[in-house]
Structure formats: structure tokens, C-alpha cells
Length: 65
Image (tube, rainbow, N blue to C red):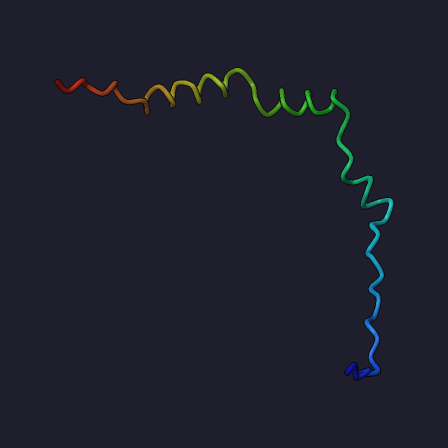
């Protein structure tokens, strides 16, 4: 037999982000992204990383048998 408890499940209001919060997630224009990329990834820094990688590489494994 069903016994009512007298408590009702409370509804929870969803948290809707503000317009400012939504706008902050928007991607930057491609021109700005490219400019930042070029500032942070110059050819000189790429060449330095490349030479470090070459120093870290090991010789190929020798064949057995």
C-alpha cells in the first residue's frame, strides 16, 4: 500500500550564463589569432626547437638475427 510522505521534490532553477559570460567564450577573429600565433611562434624559436629535437633523437635500433 502507498503511504504519502508529504514531501515534494523541489525543482531547481537552471543556471543560465549571462550574456557577458557567453561573449567571453566567443572565439577571436582569425586575424587576431594568426597575429598572436606568429608573435608566439617565430621561425627562430621553431629552429631552436628543431635543433633540440635533433639532439634528443637516438640512432635507429640495430637488427637482431
